[in-house]
Length: 630
Image 1 (cartoon, rainbow, N blue to C red):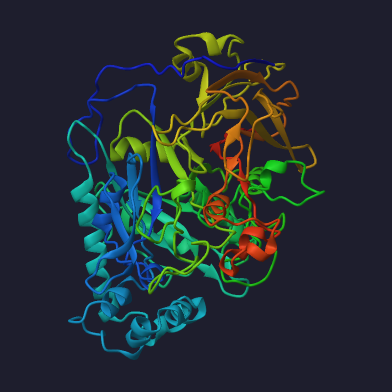
Image 2 (image 1 turned 60 degrees about the horizontal axis):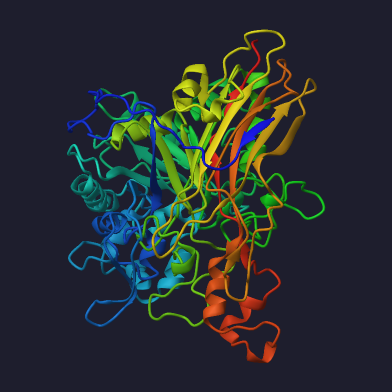
C-alpha cells in the first residue's frame, strides 16, 4: 500500500467544447470538462404542496425553493398576520442543481384545502386540515386509509382530486422551467420530479422513493402510491407512460430512508412477499440505479451496535427506531442498511443472474421547509416533516428532535451542468453523497494503476483509460493472478470566508464479498490519512484543534482478491471531528450539564444520554462491482 497525503492536486483534464446530444433544446455549456467535474445539489425537497409540510405551516412555493437554492433569502414559519416569516434562511453558497419532490399522494387535496375557490374546499376533511393541522397530518398520513378510501374526500378514480392534482404538478414543472439555466452559462439546473410515498402498513416500514425525470417531458400527473401500492407498480407505470413511450421522456427512481424501512425496502423478495424472479430484479436494477444514503431522518449506510459492530463509524446519525410511523421498534442488522443490502444483491445475482440492488449513493436533505441544501450545522432550524413543528410559534429549546440532522448533499460527476449530463451521471451511478460538506471525492477501479498515479498531472485521464469510475462494473481480470487496484482521492470542503471547511482525517475502502458458500463478508480499511491524528473539538466552545489534510490520494491494491468471488468496493472520506448542530445551540443557550439546576427545561435534551455533541462529517462514493464470469 502506498499513499500520498498533502499537496496533491485533484487534476481534471479540460476537454474542448463539445456539442452534446441533448434531449431538449438548450445552449451547450461553456464550462465543459471531458473528464467530469463535481456538481453539488439536493434531489429531495418539499414545499407547500406536500401534506406534511403544509400542515406544519410551510408556505414556500416551488419557485421560492429554486430561488433559495440559487442563493436568495427564504422566509419561513411562523408567520405574522400580514404574511411575513418570523425566521429566514439563506445559503452561504448556492447549489448547482435541485429538484422539488413534493409528495404525489394527496397533492390535489392539499391544493383544494388551501384554495377557497376550489371545489372541495369546504369539506369536513379540509376543515380538519386547516384548523387542526397536527391532527390532520396523522389523519392524512394513515397509509391504510389512503389506500382504501383516499380519505373519503375522493374515491380512487374521482376526477375531482385527479383534476386538482394537475395544478400543483403544473406549477412544479413551470418553476423548474423558469429556474433552469438553458444559456451557455449553465449556472443552475433543475429537475422535474416528485416523491412516491409508499409504506408497509403493519410494520410502519418506509418504502418512499423520489422520481427524477430527465427533462420537461413528463406524465400528465404524478404516479402515486394510490395508483398502485407497490414499487413495482411505479416502475411499470413509468415504463409505460415514460421510458418506453415515444419521445424524450426518461425517468429513474431513488429510494430513501432504508434505515426506517423495517426490513421491507431490501427484503430480498418481491413487493407482495413472494420470491423474487429475474424480471422483477431486472426492472428494479433498471429503474433504481441510486439510493439515498443520508438525509434529515438519518443515515442508511450501515447498522451499529456497541460490542457487536466492528466499524464504529457506523454509529453516525442512526435513528432509534426502524420505521417511519413511530412504532417503538429499535433498528437491527436487517432493518435495511445499504451496505448489507448491496451484499444481498450479489447473493441474489448468484441465483437469478441479475443484481436488483446494484445501486450507487447520493444524499439530500428531505427538507420540508422548501430549503434545498440547507445543511450547515451552525444555521440549522430544523427541516419540518416529522420534526418539531413551528406553524404557530417557535417552540422553546432545540428546533428539531435530537435524532434528526441537517441532511446531506448529492454530488454528480458530469461534463457540464445540464440536465442531460447530470441525469446521465445518475444513470451510470457516477455519483456520491456527503453528510453536508462539499467534499470532493473520486474513486476508480482498474487492474494496473501505477503506484505513482497520484503524482501524475493527468491521473484522472489515466484512471478513466485504465479502469472504471465509481458506479462502474469492473472488467474480467487480464490474468489469473491479477489483483484490482484503486485510485482514491479527496479534497476537503474549501468552505467560505466566515465558515472555513474542515480538514480531512482519513480515506477508507469498504469491501464486501461473497464466499464460495454464499456467505457475505466485509472489511473496512484505512488507506490514507491518520485516524490517530490528535484532532478534536472542545465541546464547551466548539473550537477545533489538531492537524488534518487538505487533500488525500492513494493507490490501493486488494491483495486478498479472489477472482471467483463477487465483490463490491466503495470509499468513505472522513473529516476531523466538529460540533454537531445540537451542541452548537446548547452552547448558545448557556447550557452547562455539570450544573443540572441551571439547565432550562426546554434544553433538557442537551444533557440527555442520547445526545451526540460531536460529529465527523463524511462522504460516501458509489461502489464499483466485480462479478466473476459465469
